[in-house]
Image (cartoon, rainbow, N blue to C red):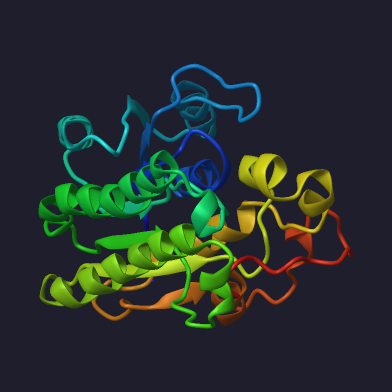
Length: 273
């Protein structure tokens, strides 16, 4: 196990939900957090901005750098990475969290929705990773974690929301490809996915409302799972598609009841599980 104190994490989509939960968890370990997200003004339906997230991180005692960054724009990515290096001197951890979702069947998938998912999920993940790689190479324990699912080829995942499925699988393939390509540089690249739905704005507003929220776990389970991945030696643990509860169980954490929104309630499996 390695200490994360004084490491720097570049996290996309950090203003709310899973990204913010991971940021806060790492902040408790003394990690410098680059809060890279689009939200500079609060959307009442979503909540959170890069500035409010940075305030929460700093309240824990860690350093935060809020940067307005739309990962669809490579110029903004390069600028954000440059600011991170100028402020903290390096990047040790990359969390590819930002993602767009539209669970529409093919004929109801408008070009703008298809393009949004591909520009954020696929192109954004690739370009943010590309921009961070030269700096990750200089770290003594560099890690990439992408919030994307195992490659489950059961046809049911293609039949209902083809565009979203292929965009998320592309995120996974990018990460596995990076694990292979940068093995020589000892850069770990792993995918992390929840076994259950996670109580986020997407679940509340797009997937199932209050009923599904009560059948979900909190983002804290993914944040804790990310921590246990990041303390592993990067040269020894890479190229995996990981499920949150399995990571925790292997770390000796078997009581997962505290992560449930409604303790003792029925949990709903996430997509691709």
